[in-house]
Length: 379
Image 1 (spheres, rainbow, N blue to C red):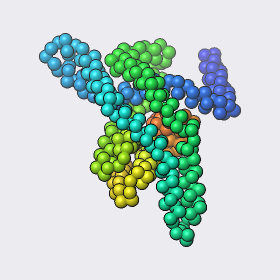
Image 2 (image 1 turned 135 degrees about the vertical axis):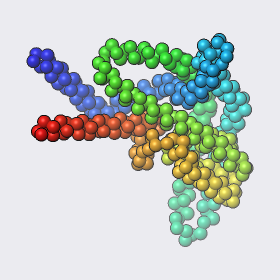
Image 3 (image 1 turned 180 degrees about the horizontal axis):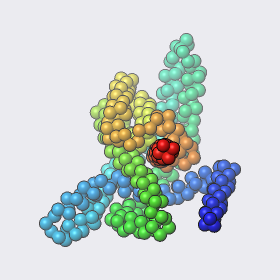
Image 4 (image 1 turned 120 degrees about the horizontal axis):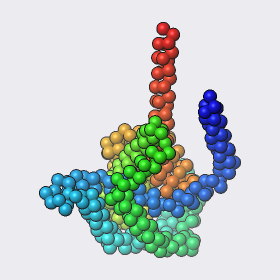
């Protein structure tokens, strides 16, 4: 009885501590979210390393399986090391080619777009002035909207920010090197990391709690891998297809716009939509009406094919979520944690949903089991 009383008091103490923590978090939610956002930005290289691990795990695993079948023992014995190094050498090679050929084009396109902003605004204002007086929306309203749209880009601060952003690529390269190094360690030494974690859990948890923890971690890993690997492949398809469409129809800054479309595709629903709207707008500013119409139609058709057939086929049913929940996750993640939050909002929401649904299923099974026991006892 004494042990049960102590267990009851310990449970009450833990519950009370959790309630106090929740109350303090709610009372200081702004400070907490700000600190959390800063912390996430600080560890972003390590978060990005997890993204790299999920993207490269499949090719590394496939290559390792092939090397294990090698007749040479010195290859089969080091199959994992060789597979990871080969995949990383290929990745670094692609990155070097990209930096050598694509980065200068991207920087040139960004600077050209920034310098031509006044010309684009004047062209849109001239078009608005030519509208009939009885148009559905007054010319003054349209012209005011155009001026407000470009107002943030016509300041010296904007060009200064563009320059700082280009210079900030050096910091991005350093973070990328950190991420690649950490992900390399994860992929090569993943068995030892897993064994260390298993020993740590066995030390502090009972078998029943350990099985429950592993079940939840398995769900988290499944959702994370499915989202990142599937989105990575789909974003690659978007990048190549959009760039090809823009090059075929001679759209200016096609390579930059294609890369933006591929990156934006990582943000479900809103990312592709915003990218398509931005591409259509830039095509209208740099080209003619016929080119804008054809490019816009091609992009919209491809977006519908991708959203309704290609992406669901790649991703399967693991991340089947209500569109409202997806948009809410993107908006909330972006509001509190910036770009990183927009990328991570959906997989985090999917993980929470998956864990919640599993918890509900477990509760239902438990209730059904209790009902059967009661029926047997009464009979």
